[in-house]
Image 1 (cartoon, rainbow, N blue to C red):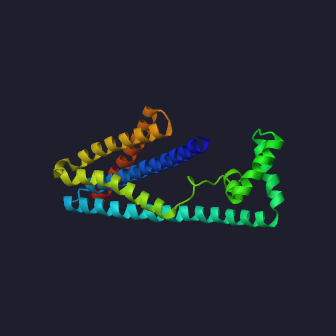
Image 2: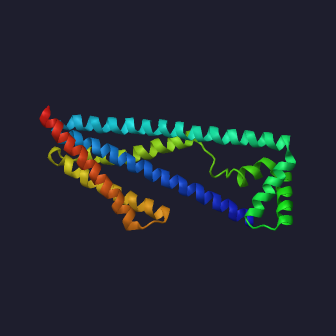
Image 3: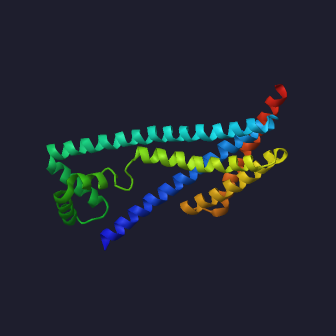
Length: 233
């Protein structure tokens, strides 16, 4: 029963982490793509130029997210592997010291000294490296870094988010393109803000307003720059 609960908890942690990352990626996709579309539109560019800019923003942003996430998570994985290699060496060189170290960890958590020593002994007999990775280093299967999965998930979530304002731009009449993209993007951001807040257990309204406010500020800024550079050009 305990193992089932632990396994379920690990899956819940992994699922929550994945969902939050997907929401953040989609949020970036919406904000980056819509801001660029509005900036180019504010510069009085032709509709086809606006759409090309939006498509380029979507592709470039997705690739950037994938590359950045892959490099970041690969570095994390390298650190985890280095820690495990060191722990494996310490277990081989001085197993008794590692047993005492694991026992001390359990005692610090409130376990009776005799029981802590027995638990450490039994866990190390079954999987010494796994016990130290989990309880000493804080590394579990649910939190293990996966660079390729992280890169693909980031690229996919960014692409889904960026496709939303781009689709609105494609379907909008030329004279309403800017306002429709802005309104639709703010609605998309508000929905994602609510999902992110609910996932993290935060205030629904606060999370929604925070994302919407900063999204509106970003779009207003790029639109203002578009107007400025449009006049200069």
